[in-house]
Length: 160
Length: 140
Image 1 (cartoon, chains in turn cyan, purple):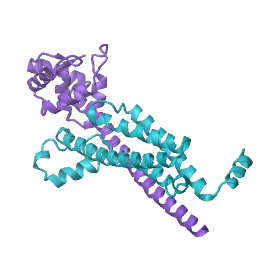
Image 2 (cartoon, rainbow over the protein chains, first blue to last red):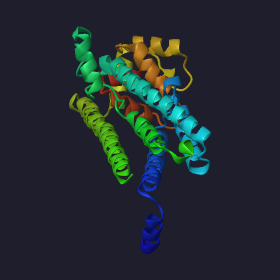
Image 3 (cartoon, rainbow over the protein chains, first blue to last red):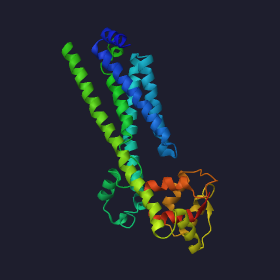
Image 4 (cartoon, each protein chain N blue to C red):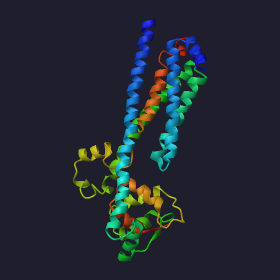
C-alpha cells in the first residue's frame, strides 16, 4: 500500500499533489464540521440554520472541483467559497451577539451587567466570559473555504 | 518553473497553517465555555443542597409552594403564558428565559425534573435561585 502511494505520488507534479491535498483537507474539515453541527443540533431558529446553506455550498464546490474541474466549475467554486467566508464572518458575529444576549443571565454578572460599559460587555462575550456560543467556531467554515480557494490557484482548467 | 512551484507550495502551506491555527483557536474556545458550564451545574446542584434542599427540583417545589404559583406546561405553553408564569415565580429576565425554554423543546413528559431543560440552562450559568424559580413554574 505504501509503495503504491509512493508510486502515485511520483506520477504527479507538486502543484497537483498540493491541490489534491488541499481538497482532501477540505473534505476532512467539512465532515468534521457536519458531525459537530449535528451533535450540537445546530438547527433551532433561523440564525442557527444559516450555517447549513454554507455547508451545502462547500460540499457542492468540493464535489465540482473533484469530479468536474472545468473552468466554469472552478469559477463557481471560487464564488461559493467567498460566499461561505462571508457566512463564517456573519456566524462569528451571531455567536458574539448570542453571548452578549446571555450576559444578564449569568449569575456572575446578573447584577452588574447593565452597569458594564459596552466594551466590557463585548470583551466578556467575545472571550467566553458569558454565554454558551463558541465565538470562533464558525471560522471552521472559512478555513475549509480558503482551502478550496487555494486549491483553485493557477488551476489547470483556467490556464487551458 | 521549479521556483514558482516552490513559491506556490510555500504560500499554500503558510496559509493553511495560519487558518488551521485559527481553527485551533476556535476549537479551544469550546472547553473555555464548557468549564464554567460544568462548574455552574455543580454549583447549581450544590447550592440548594447547602440551603437545605436535595436538588434544584426540591428547591423549585419549595419555591412554588412558597409563592403559591401555578405551573404551565413546558412543552405546550405559549410565549405569553411562559413569561407570565416566570414573572409570577419571580424569575428575572423572564422574556429571555422564555426564549431558552422554547428553544430546547420538546421535553420528555416522563421526566418531572425537566433534566433536559436543566442541562441546557446550565450553559448560561444561572443563579441557583433563578433556576429553581424557572423549574417551579414548569411541568413537563
